[in-house]
Length: 500
Image 1: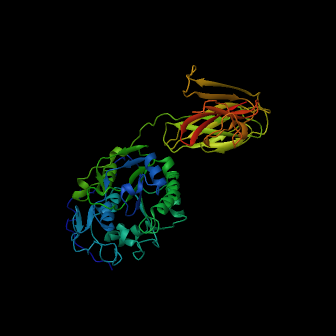
Image 2 (image 1 turned 45 degrees about the vertical axis):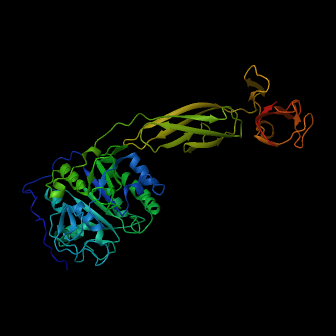
Image 3 (image 1 turned 30 degrees about the vertical axis):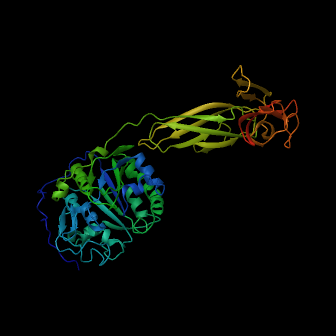
């Protein structure tokens, strides 16, 4: 049985009368989904090679780089998000907000399973405020059996279960659901069928990075979050997704944690270093729906209004290159797309004009007939609504290679004795042959024997006994011209040009 605990701050201290109150027309969003993860600072997630998905999500949408947790350990932060309170009054600094008088020591997550006795309260909470103006809510707790189950392993993160006026109401308990890791069917059913105004999601400690690695947590989010953002609620209404962490590794007010807002109600590709905290989340909901604030903490917090609304991303554009520019039948051709503008990441698809297609910014294709094809590349960005851009070029595929021709230039055009001369070969047509046209830098160990073939078959063309400058090997029709770049004692570095 839950014990009723008196509050250090009276529940009514900051409560406005709710008689005949209705929700104000939402100015920023109609629906919001809240997803809470565990125990990592901002710099452990954003920009980390272990969290590529969450980093990309932050770059694509709105990132708050000055959002701080309010206390340690987990429970006071979960309490702050739904009640403006920050845990037990005996908790050490920085306990900046209201607290639950006599509610047990909140210096650890372990011990008796909260809210089995340590955290039970008659405090006014977010559900009270929302229901008083006709707004709906649902909560999904992974590991719970549903309803007001208080026995599951991470019940101490389920702050709505700390509130006596929730757990004592069968109607309110009916809004709390179990949540499946691999197939969140009931959550997706709600999101695709007209979801509540507020949906709260707590993954368990095997998926929220409490016990599992950042990398595995990021992988989990990369499967869950796209399903949320592609749901009917997020494609047809003014919806927002908040992803944050309960606490980091520092102290308030600088315990910065990864916090993003995504979805059609939020700004794409937006970042801010303005200071916010968990109480700002409450203040944001209160401002959006015209709710009365609860405690001094959320009453004095700054709403996160700057992250909502629209910004116009730059126009999306794309182009691509083809290599080689005159491809042959049954030979590989490399297509490379370059896209800019819009909101990354980009999705790129190809139509090669011969019935084949492909995806990705770099792709290799082989044409099986000699003719001219129109190749079209299409890019779609991540903005909402998304932008698209296309680029088309004709590619003429040859049945036989064009005639071979070659030439070369040299600099300086009037060289001096004993000075470096750079020869540059320009060859077109034909078919590249690695043995003839793909000369590689060559290290020759001296001293050289002038006027004779050396051990590698080179004919030495210099007659200067002090400095070898040029030599070649091969026949008069196919020769490799080697030019000395940097002589040194016993070792000479050469650059090769193919002369056909």
